[in-house]
Structures are given as C-alpha cells and as structure tokens.
Length: 353
Ligand code: 5AD
Ligand code: FES
Image 1 (tube, rainbow, N blue to C red):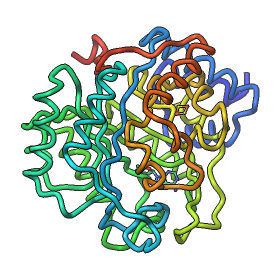
Image 2: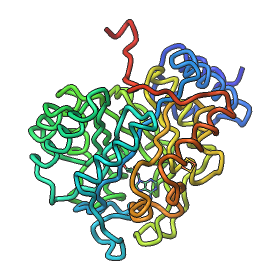
Image 3: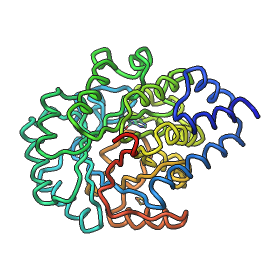
C-alpha cells in the first residue's frame, strides 16, 4: 500500500491527520487515490444524509462593501462595480418566492455595507422570522463585534457564514490590505460559535500565493474550530481586481479538498458552490459526488444578479429562482439525489451530544 493510500484510511478512521501527514497526502496522492477518497467521502455523506441534498436560498441583498479584499469583484476600490441595495420589501418578496419553491433556509449575504445599523439587521431578521417562522436564517455579512452578532442572534438569526479565507497570517496579508487581519477574522468565528450560531467557514482553492502548506493550515484550523458548515470553491479571477491576471483554482483540487473535509468532519454541511459550477458545467454534480451535501441556488432578483459579481462568468445570473431550483433539482436527480424541503440543520453525532 502506498503512503497516500494508507493516509486516506487513517483520515477516515481518525477523522484527522497530523500536519506532516496532510502534507504528504496532498503531495503524493495519485489520480487513482483521488478516486478512492472521493468514493469514501461520497459514502460518508450518504451515510449521514442519504440521497437528500439540502438547499439554501441565497439572497444577495447589497453589494456595497467597505472592505477591500484583493480577490473580490465588489471590493471598495472597484469603481466600476454597479452598486445596489435591496429594500426590506424586496428581500421579503424574495423569501416568499423561495418559500413557495420549498426553501426553508435563507442566506442573507452582502458586502460589509456600512449603511445598515445593527437595528436595521435586527429588524430585517425579525421580520423574516415573523413571516416565515419555520425557516432558518443564515447571515453572511462579514466581520462585526461580539455585541452586534449577539443582537442578530437574539433577533432570530440561526447561522452565520464567514470564510476564514486562509489560516496563514502571511498568506492572509497577501490577499487583504493591512487593516484586515486574520486575527480579527478568527476572533469573529470564535465569537459566533460562543454566541450559539451554527457557524460556517471555508476558503478559496487556488487563491494567489496559496501553497500545499497553507492548505494544511486551513484543514487544521477547520478541525480546531469544528464548524457546522464548510464552504470551499475555486478562486476565479475577477477582471477589475488586482488579481485579474492570476490563475484560478482547479476542479480537481477543489474536489479533493471537499472529500478531505467530508472525512475530517463527517456530518458537516458542505455546499457544492456556485464557483465550482462556474469552472465546470458539471462542477456542482461532481462536488456532490465528492462528498458535498448542500446547494445554494440564487433567490436574488434577476435584475441585480449580474451586479453581485465576486468573480467573472458567474453562472445562473439570468435565471429566475424557479428556473434555478428546477434546473438544480433535475441535475441532482440525474446523479441519484433529490432536493430536501427542510431547514437542513446541523445534526450533532451521538458522541458529540
Ligand atoms: N473567486 C472565488 N471566490 C471568491 N470569493 C470572493 N471573491 C472570489 C473570487 N474571485 C469568495 C470568498 C468569500 C465568498 C463570499 O466568496 O471566499 O468569502
Ligand atoms: Fe441556476 Fe441551473 S442552477 S440555472
């Protein structure tokens, strides 16, 4: 047995590896062994979720952002981004459309838009909860104080997505201006956990300056944080950013990392992301077959879809919510899965209760 093959078994058994072992696995894995880990990850997801794929309705409600991440198309310095904000009524309308399509989770995502006060977010969350009490609300609005996060939680927000982006300080500094720090990012994640949110983190695969070593740090950080959700997708260059001419992440490496993450935290909620669907026409299907168990179709009004442009060539920007939902439902059916009408909460393992 090769060393990589042995490490796959070890990861499956121990649900972790050492730093050196992870590095060896990433360096040595052969195409045949990628297929082995994919099958194991897929079987693990099946064991926990059957053939049910959880769906989250994504509402991209503002693309104003005070942050300046070098990779992101809606960064503050991008003067060519066409900025928009949805009103509360627009958002509630998206929720209604989503509800009728069977969505029971809304992900409210936006740039770090300074115009919203905590009270605005609280009002938005409580209004959605009042109208759709059987739905979960996920916020994805960036770095805030403990107090702000606590207020949103009190108002009814259930989950929070905040990718750590990279767990290596030097790498973080190459992706962001100096005033954005990994230390603060991590603190936010620990605060969110402490408050009681189901927390999601993650990173881009193939971001500029990423190495196998930094990926190992990502895996170990994720294991330490033990988030309920893990979102990864390939880095895709955006033409109006400092990284316009950088190379994007690959399908192959993203699929391998999805499989590793599935074995690392077997019951985690892992989406087959839109970015994965963007770099390959069957990317999301392949993501599911590599161990992902969530899809996040877009519920934003078609009029704003193109404007929420984090990276180039994003898919689904011209399709109404209903079209996306039925497209995805057919895609999942073709590979033997179906979309669940369910909040799709994280289920702790018996040993974790
Ligand atoms: N390519 C891929 N993913 C990106 N994100 C931001 N910009 C890009 C890009 N150019 C991801 C980040 C962020 C999430 C909302 O989108 O990881 O956390
Ligand atoms: Fe949006 Fe296919 S999922 S069009």
